Length: 230
Image (cartoon, rainbow, N blue to C red; front, side, top):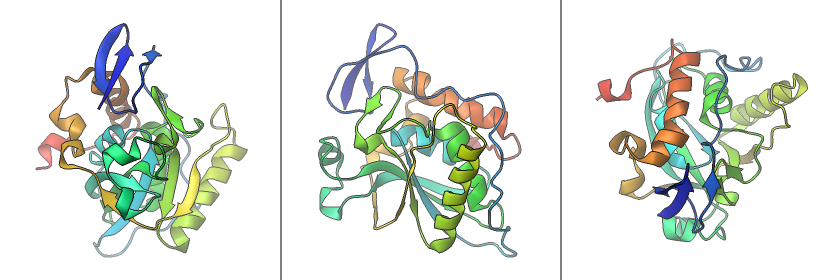
């Protein structure tokens, strides 16, 4: 893991080997969500399972957001974009593997749509205008990416990015990579549910807890207390 200086304190965070002086976390979400996707799939008529893979900075925070969304069955921290042979934390932090810290979201398409997941991804999970970084975490492994599965996910993701850019929802243009999923590789056990098991970690408090609060505030109908799910 990585030593970081935050508000003058040295803490352990989710990054590569460096020391940074940071005045804030990743992105502080607004009080209102961004517009819903105009292009989306309808809710399925029967319960089932579908998967989506997103990368948006340190996977601790991304997982912490999606595992609190109604309709999500489970969220897993891992790596995508590189090969299976290089899918370990020690290798990924070298920034030479092509991997991004990612989260696989398994959801029930009869309860939540892919477009709704994208809305949460862009609203509260990360800042899609930052290139190869999120807040204090810098490098291509922290890039914003959507690893799509099938043509429908590709179509919906690209349409939504165009919609948000055309409406100038963000101050800068979205830099999120939309690329086919070649493989998702589960991260080490100690990374799973890290924010849940380490709520007092200063990195979690500063960078990830605000995302959870923003999810609860912006999407009250979709928010579920993760601790109460299991």
